[in-house]
Amino acid sequence: MFETMRYVYLVYKEQSFSKAAQKLFISQPSLSATVKRVEDKIGYPIFDRSTKPLSLTECGARYIQAVEQIMAIENDFETFVNDWGDLKTGQLKLGGSALYSSWVFPLLVSRFTAKYPQVTVELIERRSPELANLLQKGLLDLTIDNSILDKDSFDRKVFRVEHLLLTVPAKSPVNARAKTYQIPERSIEDGSFLKQATAPVPLEWFAQEPFVLLKPNNNTRTRADAIFEKYGITPKVVFELDQQFTSYNVSCTGAGISFISDTLIARVPANPKVVFYKLDNELSTRKIYFYWKAGRYVSRAMEEFFKLAEESVL
Image 1: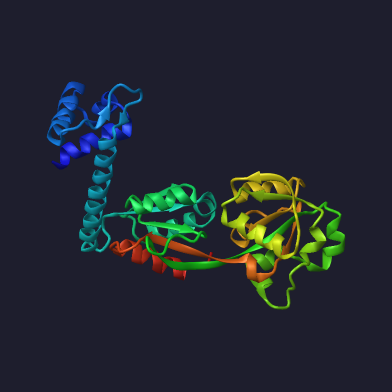
Image 2: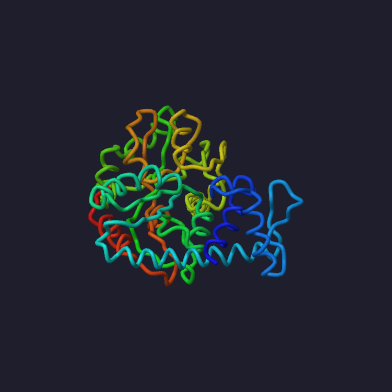
C-alpha cells in the first residue's frame, strides 16, 4: 500500500509518468499499470491524462492530500524513533523568509550541525503564506517569522525582539535638520540605541521625502503604514518591493527612505551612503517567532535547536 502510494505521489510531483518512472528505476508501462490498479481500487481516476503537464482530477487532489497527511504522520513517527538515538541520525526541516534565511538561520544552523553533525538540516526559503502552508502539511518542522499566524493552527515561541529603523540616504538634505538624532551603526549592533537616552526622530520632518516600501500585506509594510497614519503622513512612494534587503540596497543608492530592521542592519557591511534614526517603539517593535504545527510532536532535534537559539547572541 505505502509503496504504491509513493509511486502515485511521485507521478504527481513530477507531473509526468515517464519522469517518475526514471526516478523509480522502473519502466513507464509498469508504473502506469500500478497507478491504474490504484485508480481501479478507488473507482475514480487520479490523473487527468489529457493535459500536459499531467494534472489531478478532483478525486486525485483529495487522494494527494490524504497521502501528504499519511507522510506527515509517518515523518512524526520516524522523528520520535530517532530521538532514542541521541540525535545520531534524523533530520530537521527549517523554513524562513529571505531575510531570516539569509541573516539568521545560517549561524544557528552552523552551530547546530557542529554539535549534531549526523542530523540532516534542510533550509527552505519561501514567503510567509507558503511557509505556513508547508508547516500545516507537516512538510516543515519549524519556521521563523515576524508575521502573526493563526494560534489555533500553530504553536509558537519568541525567538527575539527586533526593531525597525528609519534608513535614510546620507545625501538627503533632510539629514541636516535631523543630524542630532542619527544613531551610529555600532549602537545598532550592540543594541545600545534602545536605551531611553536615544530619542526617536520626529517622523514629520521626513513627510515630503520619497519612500521605498515593501509591498502590501508584508508585516514591515503594515507597520510602516501604521506609523504614517499616526503622524498624519501620506508618503510619496517611489518603489514597492518584495524584500527588505532590496529596500535597503535601494536606499543606499539614494532613491528613497526605507524601514529596515536591526536584524538586517546589524549584519550587513557598514555603508556610508545611509544613516539611521530610531523610531517610536510602539509601532516599530515586533517579535520574531519560531512556529510549528499545533499539537505536533516536538522532537528532540527541535528542542535542541530551541536551546541553541536561546543561547546564541546574533
